[in-house]
Image (cartoon, rainbow, N blue to C red; front, side):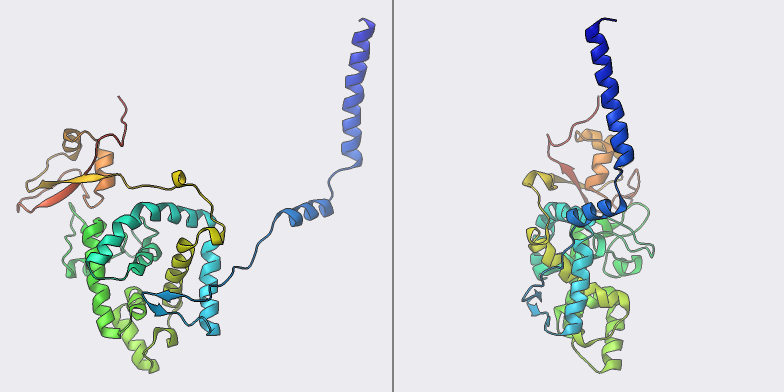
Length: 309
C-alpha cells in the first residue's frame, strides 16, 4: 500500500471514530427533543367572527353558550385538516351544481352547507340507511316521490334529491317560522323539534335544549360556512389546480329497458365505471324499465377521460 493510500485510509478511520465518539458522548436528550418540539409546533386559538348569520338570520354570538358551541365546531373542523381539505376540494366541484338548484327551488344559498354537514359532499350511506348528499331515509324519499328500488335509487340523483330537500325544508320553515329551526328539524325531524319547543315553551332554535347531535348540528353547518367562506383565514392554502372540478356532461333520455350498462356505456365512448360515477342513482348492471318511464342519464363530454387499450 503506498503512502497516499495509507493516509487516506487513516483519514477515513479517524472520521468514523470521531462520529462514533460524538454520538456516544452527545446523544439527543429528552430535554433537547422537547425543546425542539416546542419551538416547531404551535396550535393557535381561532379568531371568532364578529358577526355570523344563517340564511339571513343572525347568530347570537354574544350569548356565551352559543359562542362556545360555535367555537367547538370551528375548532374541530379547522384542526381536522385532512377532512376539511377534502371538503374544500369537493365544494369547488359540487357547489356550482348545488347553488343553482337551491335558487331554482327557493332555498337560501346557505343550505349548501347543510349538505356538507350531512354527507361531506359524498354519496355516502349511513349505518341507519340514510343515503346520498342529502341523506334521505328510504321512507322519507318515497314519501316525497323519489323512486327507490333495486335498479334505481333517486336519493343519489343530485337534482331530484335537492328538489326533495328543498320541499322538506320549506315545509319546516312554514311550520317553525325560521330557516335555522328548519335546518335543525332536518336532523331531528319536524315532530321532534316541535315537541321540544312545546315542552320547553320557546320558539327560537337558540333557546332550545336538544340532544347532543341536534345541538351540534346547526353549529356544524355554521362552522362549515365560516371556514369555506374564509379558508385562508383558517390556514387552508391551495392553488386553483389543487381543487376538484366538475366534468361537463349531457343527458341521454332512456325510456326502455337497458340490458347491459357496460355495453350501453361503450356506445357513448365511456366505460361502466365512468357511467356509474356520473349516475350513482343507477344501482344495478342493467335497468328493468318495463313501465317505459323516462330516465335521463348523464354522459361526460368527450376528451375528459382516457381509457386503457
